[in-house]
Length: 276
Image (cartoon, rainbow, N blue to C red; front, side):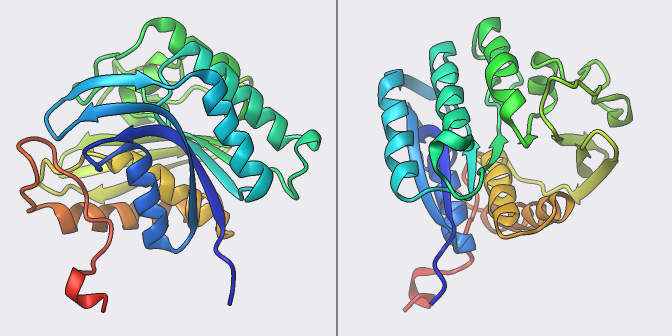
């Protein structure tokens, strides 16, 4: 029997189960890879709002990363909700260690940075020094960064004054990430993601699904890209497959009535009585 590929998410816990580490682990379970996690924060949240956030100490996050990578290793790593300069610094330091010669891993893990910087209204959740810490510490390590328009603007990766014209976005930055996937651009009846790798630029549209049940869709997309890339697909193909997976998950959960706000995705098509 083939062993599953180990993947690591460094993200917050969502008590509502829709986003964060829970979305990543559900995505990876559905795709048949083995999910590891290093939690950055514990949240009290539901489909309507985040009521409280408790950040874990940097040394505890470092200990989680070291514990799993020293034993399981990881083919690919994804970061999600970080939210504090000190956390970003220690995470970047440990990822640089494990991605270098000193870490002892057989190959350098692929790193996807999903920069959680704004709320669902596109408003910044943290002071500017958090985005600065991403730019200084994490983005230079990233193989792919997956911001939405508002996050890309905060990171200096785009100009969000042109929200309807993605062709004007993505200015190359030699000190930044190797690749960018600018996600979730609304255009007519489509949602468009724009991929850039320094040489080529690709628009990747998907049909818009009329639902508010999209909580965790960004996490799911980035986690799925992580899995498909770890499985050996090149970047454009990994992104296309991840888009298709995420689109199907949104469609499966589109009519659910779980909670009063933005509901979760349907990560797996199997009902309980179909798994027996």
